[in-house]
Image 1 (tube, one colour):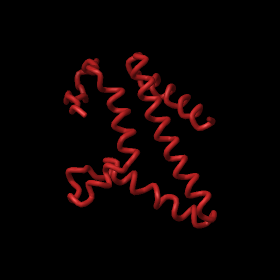
Image 2: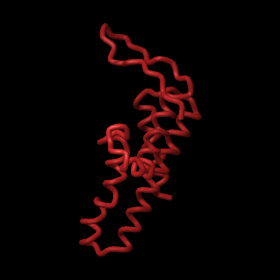
Image 3: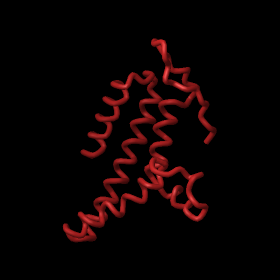
Image 4: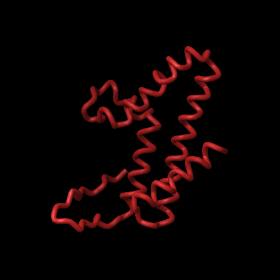
Length: 130
């Protein structure tokens, strides 16, 4: 319960501080996806915490989470990885959480981002269909 309340509070603050569109379905989907990723990560941490000693948990805990992060698309993209590693991308809960957050913020026919300066750093590329 405490994890969910903290995740929801953080996501609402981040969503509005980054000036995202004030659509309730976007905010709900963004908050839901971030909260679910936090709950899954906490569950993995609790499983490691009850199954190992404190010393071993401190060493092997990051090793248990790191494959999910490596194969989430942050460090290596699926198209750059060998074919025999592709199944690891499909097991990463972080990958699905990031995709859902990006889809919530930039999907649903969101208009083009506005530029008020002489130089615009935004590049328009339509999102692929999932």
